[in-house]
Image (cartoon, rainbow, N blue to C red):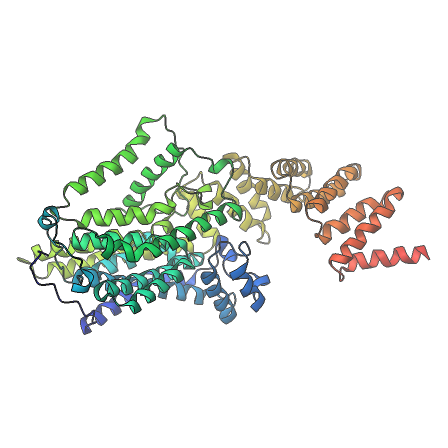
Length: 599
């Protein structure tokens, strides 16, 4: 806007009848595309998010907010939402899927409204500061309004199959719930940017904080708003653009650092698998950016667990990925005077991806450096760019073919919706999920391990779990839980007890401070008379590590009482078991007999 030109009127943001119709179309299309997800069961780690029995009370709700570590991640508002949902419908999966799907469809509609405000709105006189535009800024054209682009972008976001993982997997309700509040914060802040009234500002800040309490990846919002303002205006001003967002940036940074600490200290995102040099992290980040771009443009061969790359700074071809990102950024910067949209979309995409690019430790990177659900929020930028580009292309073709635009929109929606429908089937249950994962990535040791865990808990299929655990250990020999599970199963199969013991020994070597492994290894050794001293050693370690394990205290007493010289020590462990659990019937009975013998 030139120095002396009149300011544009502030957009009212009113929603027309056409908008209501488009919103209904987006919601209906989304529900149709994701209909197969509604029949899905709980999968993999859903039990870590759907409220645990120990937290299904008011005191449990208090713990969710005040005790990091009692839930999988410290996202208290998300876990409070799961707490309320479990109170309403327990372990029935359909309502959880319906809520997640409604949130996803609602986010798509809100996304369209945010784009509408960005496309239509420009700052009011109150939002402007003194001084004219620079010559460079004046030479840059303002973005042109593309009627309907916001709804095409919303359809692309809603139906894109790479988002199925975020919608069909109940755990990822954290994505859909946090995005609702992220978009509400953005929409409200854009209103503040037009009016400069304190009410919208504080309301937007409130929505932002709420989004952080659902998932901290939304901490990127203030940076995203700055990108949007640069796209809209061609430049950024300190007082108008940066200053109001300083509190947001500080809050986001603080919450992000706290979440990183929780990931390391409670989820286990530390150790050898996470000790990567900075150069290796840069290689991972560059490759991840191209991976996510590729999945958005070519959404085929989607998988739950992708191969985990081995970054190697001495490998020249791996440097092509980060160098390619830099070259693409430079190219988009070079054309910014013709159009700022591609660079703005790319900056939004990469900036929103930054928390998951490998520069901070995330537990999920133990299995793979890339996940479909990690690009859920970042894809907003690409969807906005794609929607705008398609509408501009259709506007050009409509000079000759008026029906081309609507027809191609229907074809695109049908194509993406069909891919999403098909991909939903992968998330039906654990067996389907991990069989499909292995069909597309046979080196996914986590899929072998979890498939083995699923089969070991299915009556009549325990023996089928053995080859799955063995396959997991061939790929990753240092999995204590795989050795432990394999040892447990093999020790029950006639003739394979020695193999089971060898796996227990490996599990103890890899996880010496795991009380459960020690306890169950002791149970196996207790069955072999000549290994009684070894069983006692394992039980002693189990109660040392976890003195509150009543079963280990009792079994240690059982092992000790077989030696008359150790009876007094055995009695102390029976008493310890009863102190931990006064209703322990076996311990009660043995103490009753001992007291009767004493009389």
